[in-house]
Length: 451
Image 1 (tube, rainbow, N blue to C red):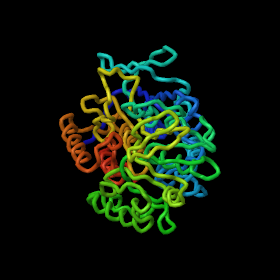
Image 2 (cartoon, rainbow, N blue to C red; image 1 turned 180 degrees about the horizontal axis):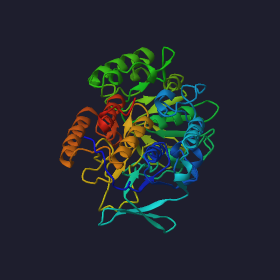
Image 3 (cartoon, rainbow, N blue to C red; image 1 turned 90 degrees about the vertical axis):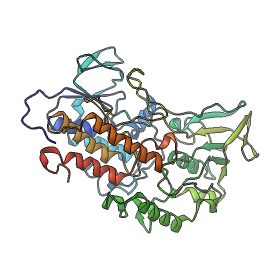
Image 4 (cartoon, rainbow, N blue to C red; image 1 turned 30 degrees about the horizontal axis):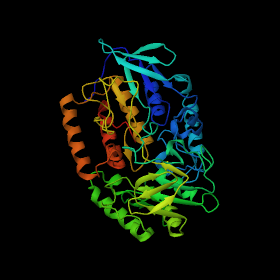
């Protein structure tokens, strides 16, 4: 339903974070005349895609990082990426794109850099008090949280038995084979099977870098290539993008066939056989992993059983001498500026209607809290427009009870489909999710707002 003819003042709105999710929100709000202030705790836009933000603990990027969804899925619809970019650009090229986005739409004067939000409190009058690390407090009518979910490292728990004489870091700290640890000529275990783990392990496994690298995996995963038949795989026709109503099993069948034709089965390379169908878990995207394993540069190991000083014992009974362990064990979804009595996230579970709204709190919005096989940027752009239309009085959301019913149904579908893991609590199918967000926007003035 739409709401027209309102004369109420436009709500002064706070946006937390000037990364890939916060920037399109700032743009959408400004375009609708909504007074907007964006707080960014670093001196830079781009969030995790600005590697200089590692100094502030706000970037998980490493020097060799390239995107694993191609430019056509990564770009905002309002500003296509330059045609001369490669299909999978580096983090520096992506950061330059975000800088150009800020300049193209004149967003910089709405962003307050070097301002960390330390507390957000909803007052009895419904307004938000936002406190900064400087000690100052400002009041807003609405709050948009876009602080990302790849900045608070999750370390393995419980702690493994025994001491370890070598060095240990989380992948969040890794920048290159010499920073923050000198891993050249060393024996290194990389624990995890996500994209960061695979990128770091394949980089270190070059014979000119580490002496020996072990990839420690607990369970199997499907390896998705970046290219298939010379085409970036995310540019191939996606059934659920073309037909959002199509069951995910159809896409799973097609993806499984593509992966089998390209690589064979993971077990052909000594990896654990996945205990799930393709797209029942977030796939690992790599063109290099299986080649490294096949050449013997990268050895696959089961989980660590015990730390033994300068050695590590694995669950298969093998023991290896190690100099360092890199824990690629993911991230916690956390909001340190909220009181736990207001909002506390456990096991990365945060029930949000369309990954955006906490039912019953109509002036608080979250953007970018989802994990698609695709980019975060384009859904965030749509979420920003939805929030802008709502705050400008042109779009009403469903009643709270309807939101809760839809949310419960979505959670049940996610639990039925995906392996139970904190990694999958925010999983979405890119095409159907984009379709849902566009459908919400179509309610505005009864016409299409997204081409």
